Image (cartoon, rainbow, N blue to C red; front, top):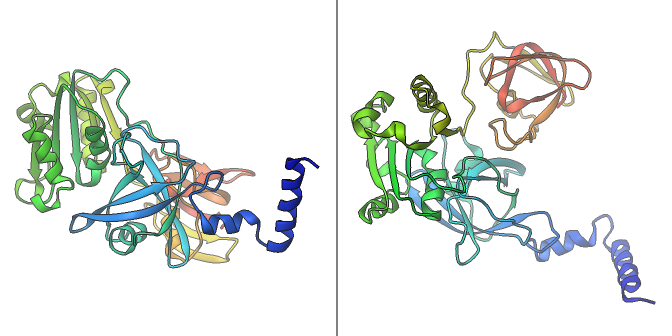
Length: 351
C-alpha cells in the first residue's frame, strides 16, 4: 500500500474518532495559524496611541499573502459570543522584519469592535483575517510631489504609506481636535524633523474645522500635487468638490471609512422575516445597524459598501442606497447591501 493510501486511511479513521468535528478542527485548536487553515492571526501586543486609539500587533497565519501600503484588512473578532467583522487599514510597512502586521484602531462611541480592540483584547487572542484589499495605494511610479490630506483616524492608511517608502516631496495636512488626539503624533514629528515630510498639524478645537479653501495658503502648490485624502465625509466631500471645480479631479484619491449619507426617504417598518422581528426605522440609518440594534444576527464586513459581506435578500418593499439615493425594489432574487441601504418605506429583509 502506498504512503498516500496509508495517509488517506489514517485520516478517515481520525474522522470517525473526532465526529462530529473534523481532524482539522482539532489541528486548528493546536495550531490555528497553520498552513491550510482558515486565515487567522494572533494578537501579540496592544500599544496605546492616544486615549482612545491603539495599535494592534498581529502575527498572521501562513496563508497571509501580504499587503500594499494603504490597503485595509477585514478582521473578525468575537464580542460577547458573536463574531463581528470590521475593516482596518494596515499601518505597518510591507517589509517588517518580524513578519507581523499592525492595524491602528480608534474606539468609536458606539463601536462594539473598535472598543473591544482598543480596551479589552489581550495578547494571545486568535482573530479571523481576510486578505488585504483596497485601491487607496500609491502607483508603481511614485509622483514627484504628493499631498496627504487627513483628519482623525484617516491618518492610518497614510501612515502605512509613509512607513513603507520615502517621498521626494511630501506634505501632510492633518486635523485632530487637540494635540493629544493626533494618532502617531511622535512618529509624524520625527518624520518632519528628518525632513522626510512637511507636516501641517491643525487642532480643530482651537482652530476650527479645515476650510479646503485654506489650502491656497497652507500648501500654495496643492494643485500640482497628486493627493491622497482620508477622513470624515464632510472633509472628503469638500475636497472632491474643490478638486473638481479646478478641473483636476483625477489628481485626488479618496478613502471613505463610512459611506457618505444623502438625505433619504421616510423610512418605514422593517421586518426581519427569518427571526420574526419587526422594528421601525428612519430613512437614514443603515439596515445593518437597524438589525443589530434589534438583536438580529446580521452578516457584515467592511461596513462601507466595498466587500459585499453583508449582502442579504430583499423579500418585499424598497430600500434606498445611502451613497447614491438609488431606490431598489424587491423582486425575486434581488440582493441588497445592508451596510449602505436604508428603509424607503416598509420592507422585509430575509434575516
